[in-house]
Amino acid sequence: MRTQGTNKYLVGPVEQFDQRFDMYKRVRWDPALKELGKKLWSPSLPKGKEGYTLLERAWENAGWYVEMGFAKGIQIHDYGLYSWDSPETAHYHALPSGARMEGADPAGMSEVVKKVASSLGACLIGICELDRRWLYSHSFHFVTREYREMEVPSQIKYAVVVAIEMDYDMVRTSPSAIAGASVGVAYSQMAFVAGSLAQFIRDLGYTALPSGNDTGLNIPMAIDAGMGELGRNGILITREFGPRVRLAKVLTDLPLEPDPPLELGVLDMCEKCKKCARYCPSQAISHGDRTTDPINISNNGGVLKWPIDAEKCLNYWAVNGTTCTNCIRVCPFNKPYGMLHTLVRWSVRNMPWANDLFVKGDDLLGYHKQLRPNDYWEE
Image (tube, rainbow, N blue to C red; front, side, top):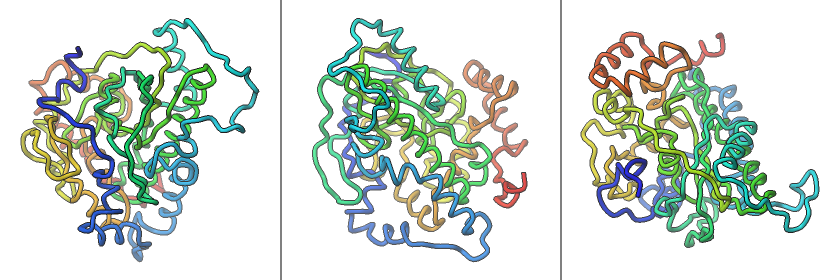
């Protein structure tokens, strides 16, 4: 029985989350959100508004091109690059029918899988035993509204979770469409990585189900895979990039060795910092203590965390005309690589008594401040 990982957040029974209650899906069926759905997808080019011009909108669409055209992990599972089966045209070299790698050492095979994932473009990779509480109980097709029970084969025992880094300077322009483009680029990259990694595992003779935001909850699986901890902003906080990542996974029956959970000191820092709550335009992030009480049906109960008011968050997206990553931009864990930042991360983990000082220093140095979109183009 694990004593860390997601278990440290659980204080009661947790039911599988129904994907229909995902905030992004609710705008397709919840009558109370009908008008919000119209606002979210209505074309808008605010005249003269910096960071929201046709230039930035075109870049945002380019970033989302692979995800929207060939993966659709934000809409439904088992499609395109996230297909659970290999298309007949997927092979560069034909392989013997029934070929299967037998007897491989799980630890050694885990290193092989990580090396392949890294070569494909994954910035971080973690492996965990699949906890089926984190699979969706039901799937909901964003376009067709098809609603059905989620069926993941019983032989699937492991999840390989991959993280894609979002560009630091693009995120600094949040909440502009440039930051929105960084989100789209990451979603397109993770579709390529997860889809290609699944193809590699299938060619070894095993089942592999690539997945973006579909099939199950990425953050709990990433926590169990030793990739980070849960932050006040409701996002995975990683050691290397803080919250500035997007997640995908491959579910498989290939025998692998799980990674140990990671302790970064996130809980103590988030209790003291609260910058994501202060700078959230919609005030969707809690300023208070952790709780197991859901705010609305888009939260799951039984988990001790800072619940996010996704209704407020998505309402701001509609007003803003694109996604918002302010809670990532202002997070003290969101720093580019450097010796000083590495030292601070070490200190947060090992010297939590100094966290108040680190937060004040972060404020003083202005890391939370927005980079003007026009200045981004001139850098």
